[in-house]
Length: 307
Ligand code: PSU
Image (tube, rainbow, N blue to C red):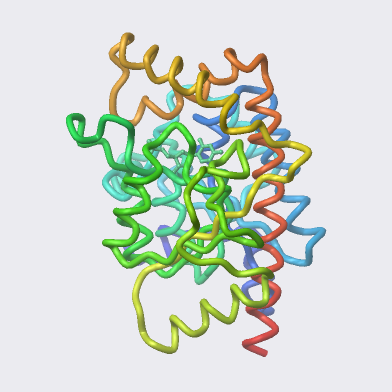
């Protein structure tokens, strides 16, 4: 079976690709494993609108009926958001879901692979996976980091999720040659909070400069993507000092419950929601929307450079 039999573009995405319009890839693990119903589907649909309003076309990615679907209808998105037993797919099991026709949501790593196959260079998410706390004994390091080193897609995030070991995550990204660029400030953001307490390796101040940096890496023939860290808007942030207590509690709870590997991030995000009385979810929604806007602006700037 040829590659084109495995990928199906929605009519909106196919028309945009044919016309050379800016496209932004969006993932679905955040829908199936990152947020509860019904906020998950409302957020996903709202994020698509943010991309459209900023002049680009959203391409939400999932695995349905043995195909990589690039662009979902509202009904398809809602069905996926309600479904139980959806696989959380990364590089290791993306093809497994296709081969066995299991429904699958794409993580950052799998979305990057699918976006690249579809010719999309920019992708917006909430926060990437990274090196988990205690990785020195658990070896739990997200495949997202290795994908950033391999696949030429720029990922717009609010930083690595604060539940991770952020200094170790930065070290691995540096070793792998992945640029980490924070928008508009010197400090690396930490997902729910604007300041991780660590300096960002690189800083740029607008979408056009990010597009120029991407083009320069392409000119040099450097493989892999890059990570953009876009601080959550001030009005929506929860300060790091306040989050620290909840993160410690949630990770302790995960360890006590014997939660491991792929299940850790969804469990901890769910516990954070309870511990913060819903505030972590409101902040998560705000930061994803903020990232979608920036990703669309970068896609528009890239197209202006190309044209
Ligand atoms: N951003 C969010 N919520 C999420 C994710 C990102 O706001 O749930 C997902 C992404 O799909 C990312 C995954 O790839 O969490 C990381 O999972 P892990 O830590 O198991 O690699």
